[in-house]
Image (tube, rainbow, N blue to C red):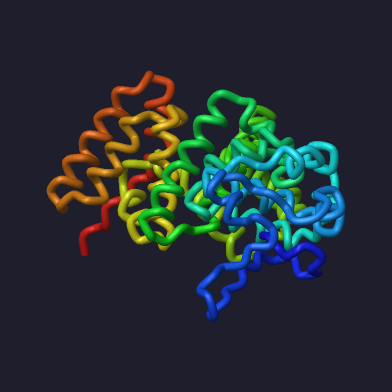
Length: 311
């Protein structure tokens, strides 16, 4: 990030003299590395006004490397944070993706909040993290994503954004159900509402929003553990993503731990084990309160066919 004094380039430059084997460092970049300090070249406010994304990059580099942001570099950030709102949505999405997939997203999010930049990156993030259950869910999701990224495993952007926006979807979903809407249509409408708001701000690509939608709509289907529903779910292309999402919900105590355990055994079980699990789920359902059991029975009951007359 350092350039020789008076140079116009904004990238880091170290020069090597092959004659005497010396490295020429005109901006004391090596000293900053040894001090574990991140410092922008030139006047920080001017640089941030030229490109507000630099504030996000300073946070990402500091969090990933474990560096301290130089006081002069940090000072204008809180005052200029509003400039992030003027960044084109496509650029903001790219930068957010780099941050979330860096392997250090938890540290980055914490640093963003400390610098007052979270509103410009994800307007809903502050609201989500102020809710105890929401913060636990988001941080668990990000921590598991960081583990995968540092282990060199694939990280799906759709899964990340599904986790970050889940509580907003859930809040709107619950409000619609409470107003008398049916469960699944209410969920679809809540998803449409959230995606319309966030995709406009973040320019989330359609291929990612499709993944997010499928992950969200799979969650109620995990509650169906009788009949052919579990087997149909096994054939779903997004089963793994939806199942991983369910496990995080269970870890955050948003869904019963028993539900996650049941699906873990069902997915990895043999035919005999799956049959036993479904029988167990059927008994649990039949032992539900009488009103719930009778409603379920009415939904399952089909008219009996009249026996064929003898010829």
